[in-house]
Length: 291
Image (cartoon, rainbow, N blue to C red; front, top):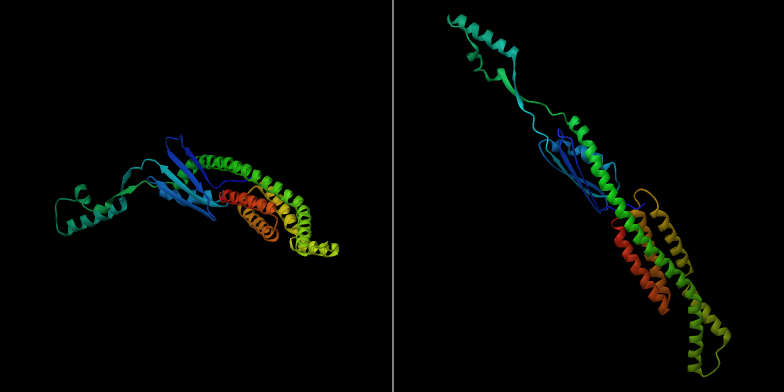
């Protein structure tokens, strides 16, 4: 099954404690690339996790991911350092005793030492957030993959229609080859008669036709084209990344078609070659979007 690299997926969490929106957009690319853009207090901490998770689920293409994470920021809390307060209190008492101060140090004096009470933000458990939003990422990816499959199916249908057209043209060319030689033989005989005004030598004509047949023989090219077309059909039914295989076969089909064009002097075959090349070019455009 062909998979398109162009697709879009979206999912939104229904969990009020972990509100998140995931958007995934894919476009064609020769390589494998994921870019994550995040919005929200904690979303940037999840970028690498989301990126690696998505990377493991596809083979080729450029994917842009947007993460909208609206988890409320947890409040910062005052935290007393009791041991440090005891140490400060003892130090102040020692000073009071040494200086014969009658009033012992109180809480207000201790609070002047700012490091006795510190403000500590409650730690965010990134693993907890990830475990809670992972299902939303899966939903967005499922939506994304569903569109890729749908687009891939459409591409496959169009490509197969064009492959069948090329196959039909190839068969017509194959049928045309003997007619081409027969036409060449008749044309050669007429030309000799016009020039020499005598009956052409049958052996000489046969030799010329044989030479022409050898020079314009496209049997191997036609056989290879049929083979490549059959492989094309097989690969389109395979799972996984098939775009590069199809691109290689397309290059080979173009090569064989160009060889036929250079060998054949028949006008009808030349027209059919142009039609084949036109179909191959349209297939090439479609393959650019296949994973």
